[in-house]
Amino acid sequence: MSEARYHINLFWSREDECWIADVPDLRYCTTHGETPDEALTNVREAIEGWIATAQDAGLEVPPPRYRPAIYAARFAA
Image (cartoon, rainbow, N blue to C red; front, side, top):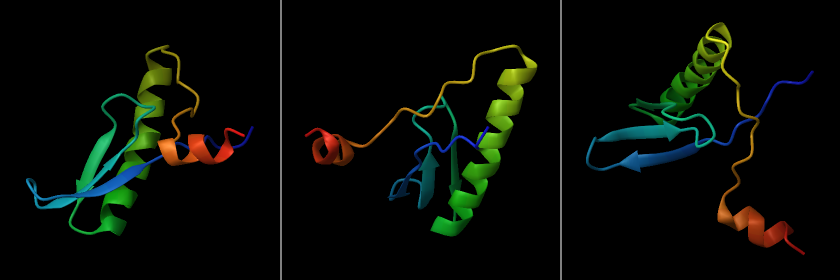
């Protein structure tokens, strides 16, 4: 089975003064970093930890489903 590929939202938070990386399909799977690369590295580790924790607890791991609106409009035809 291939590795699940979850969408990651990456954005600058002026309020927090750092980069935020969020995984919409995995509730509360959010990290931050001083650079975009650091935030992405952190969120990839968080995804692995989120999935491992859910599996250890016998919880269902949701499949990747989230797609930004831009994709929905592009591929709706």
